[in-house]
Length: 338
Image (tube, rainbow, N blue to C red; front, side, top):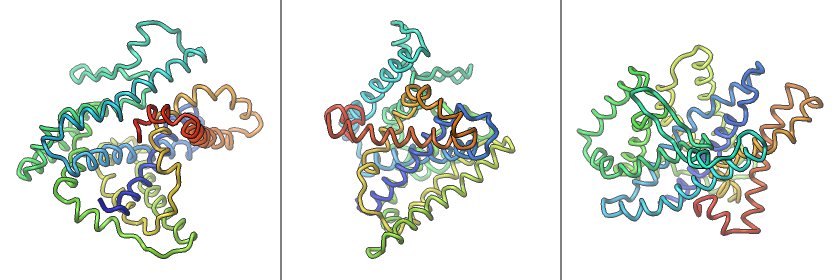
């Protein structure tokens, strides 16, 4: 794989994980009237699209039918085990904080993610953000079918158009199996047919550049993403459906990847921190809210949410680094050996 392309995708994953964290961490402040809080929440819309796209891209990049069993087995370590562990951690944190009453049925229910299309009923896992992992696993299970789809252009393109029209026209639920298929299949298709051309085009970097140049490159990428976030924020204000915005997010994010022309020196937290932040930010919110809440009266309603949000994100990074240094085996379990 083109190493520059890989590093760029890693940076985008890191940036998107922060936006997802901002969405969930800002829930307590949704109704405080601050536009910046509402804007943070909309930045997560294209981020989730990127997660599905990139997961498919790296899964199908060198995929063949004989890899099915091995890749599925690997996903048990990289996805299923962290899913179980993090849901249990969230359950324990919520029980200690007094949000729930522990029970045997509660422990069983904490792992269940089910969406029933006919009656439009959703049961999220205890750690709601991890529904993404289960949906990803269902796509992994369907890999032989998806491979057959992306192999043939005369199947892929009509099916993609049909699913997009159906999802948009029928207001298909966000949690539905079919909802994220266009984004996932797009990543799989590009990986299977266009990886060399795509990675060569998007993997371009400049070998020379000052620290200022490198930081400016990342800043321009974030700005491009933020402008698209502004478009999504406009849709939210006008109460317009997000479906088209989620699908259009893929070319926009690929443009963002292209805009990264200088890569900063390798940073530990960028390499390791995305998955841990994705899984840990909600349990940390549950654990630290009562600790951080007294700051509200001092900082006020404008600054307190900002300090609250970014403090938890920074604490997540520091906590991961400590676990990595003191107990690397535990870190491997929590992050699926990433």
